[in-house]
Image (cartoon, rainbow, N blue to C red):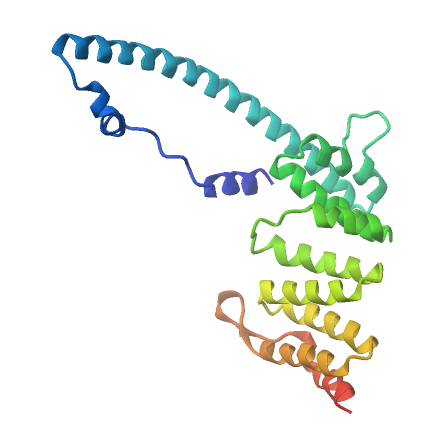
Length: 249
């Protein structure tokens, strides 16, 4: 998790630093004047800028130190809750322990709401509620999760949300979300699953023609280059003809 956060931070665009050349170009007209006035102005500017730079550096170091500690605390709390979730202790993973020493996803999401840790806690909270068949809460927290375009997490989170919509009777939302998840994933492992789920919902709703379109999309995953260039096939490809035949009658 820490490695992932480090990669995400590294991927964020860095703000360009102002150079002396930028300063001169911006303020050159204001600096035109007598030699004495120029010395006074530049001297004053240099003193003030150095003073501000020192203060800014001190403040930046303090903020970075506090932010690092904050992030590390959030990472540790998130990792502990993840372990509980892996052990299928969903209630404990959600709410933490009674002593307060171990935070649950709900508290992490609240306390770290403006961070990547808090954002990820929303996803885990939604998944916990899904495992507990509390689908309204699952929808609530899965909707809070901002995938930020992550190519690995985003399709899976979107697929989970689509399934949650289905469980609360929001079929149209479920179908569109599952289709988006399949398109976003565009891989042999996830896409066929979501297309079939969307098709089954449509078929159950009596929309056979639309279901057929979903099932037909699975055919494109009959052969796809997988890990190390090995050609792979989705397990759904072996049975998808039966789905297609069923809605083509």
